[in-house]
Length: 85
Ligand SMILES: Nc1nc2c(ncn2[C@@H]2O[C@H](COP(=O)(O)OP(=O)(O)OP(=O)(O)O)[C@@H](O)[C@H]2O)c(=O)[nH]1
Ligand SMILES: [Mg+2]
Image 1 (tube, rainbow, N blue to C red):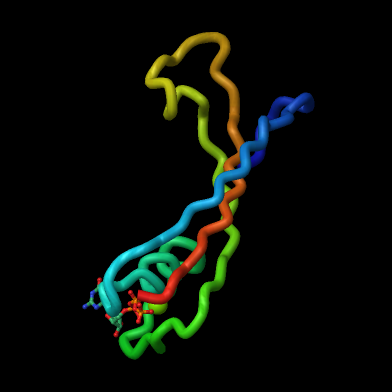
Image 2 (image 1 turned 120 degrees about the vertical axis):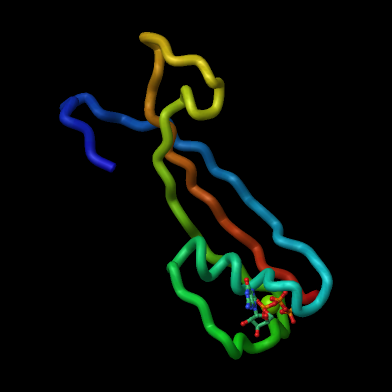
């Protein structure tokens, strides 16, 4: 997301997310859909852990629920770990 403000400087936060669940429930699929917007009907079983990275920009008010003058853009750098079921 770009801003017209030349002083645009999002505050970056790093998140490490771990997706866990029983075998074959769709852990890898939901990560692929979220990060790359792809779905594979015959998704191979995950044989070892792995991660994908994803960046989202959101308004701080989306977190706090309060819209006011101090509203700022938050850059979420996510490392999403996939695991073996
Ligand atoms: N119809 C349908 N099939 C899905 C969905 N999500 C996953 N699948 C299918 O379910 C199967 C298992 O999905 P995976 O994403 O490999 O599941 P997983 O939890 O990563 O499995 P493991 O890596 O073996 O632990 C695959 O054949 C997917 O195509 C869904 O929302 N709908
Ligand atoms: Mg998997």
